[in-house]
Image (cartoon, rainbow, N blue to C red; front, side, top):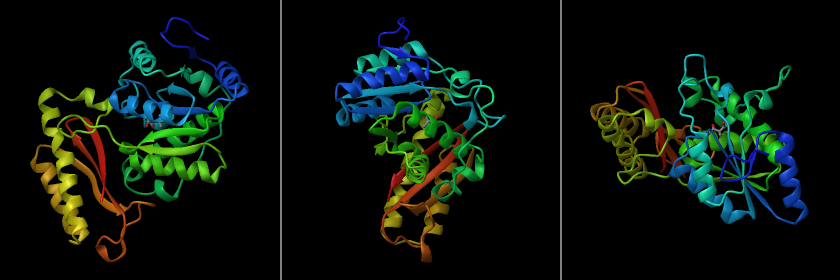
Length: 286
Ligand code: PAF
C-alpha cells in the first residue's frame, strides 16, 4: 500500500485483494467505480452512487492502452493522480486502485474479451478496437475487485450496455448499475476530454445536448426517425461542430434500430461529433 496520498492506495492486485478481503471478513459490502482518472463531478456522482449502495467503495484510475487506437489520444489523455486522489478522499472513497500498465497487462498476457450485440455499430463503426479493449480491462477489474456492485455512467451508454452484456455472458456476479449523466449549468455532458476544448469551443459544444433534446422530443411525437436524425445532424453542424460521426435513435435495451422507422417503446438518441480535434459523445433517453 502507498501512503503519499490522502486515502489508501493499492498499486497491485494482491494489495487490492488483501484490503477487500478484510472488508469482506468484517461483513461489509463493496462498491466499485472504474475510471481513467482526470476526475470531474461526473465521476464523483458515480462514487456517491456506489457509496449509497455499498459499505465500502473502491475507485480505479487506469488509462487503459487497449481501448485507444494508435492514432488516438493515449499519450495526451489528461493524467492528474494527486488531484484525483484528493477528490476521491473528499467523497469518502475507501480505496484507490492505481495499477501500472505492467500490473494490468504483465508480459505474456495474451487473452482478450471479444464483444458483440450492443457493441455492434455506433462507436464501433468509428473506433473498432474500443469495446474489445474496454471489455477486457473491465472484466479484469471486476475479477480483481470482486465488488457487489459496479457503477458506470449513462454518459457512455453503449459502453454501459456492453459491460452489462459482458458481465452476464462471463458469469461475473457483480451487479452493473448505470448512473445519470452529470452536466454543466448549460447542459454540456461532463467529460475528461472537455479539457481539450477552448472556452469558445466549450460554448459551442452545448449545442450537442440541445440538438439531442430536440431530436428526442420529435421522435417521441412519432416523427420518422430518419428525418429527425438528419435534422439533428444539420443542427449540430450549424451550431459549430466540424464533423459528425453519427446521430442515431435506437432501441434503449439493445441499441438496434426501430423497425418501421418510428419510435416503438423506449429509445435512446446517441451522437458523436468533432469540435476541432476533440471528439465528444452524448446521449439522452427518448
Ligand atoms: O469509461 C471509462 O472511463 C473507461 O472506458 C473504463 C470503463 C474505466 C474502462 O477503461
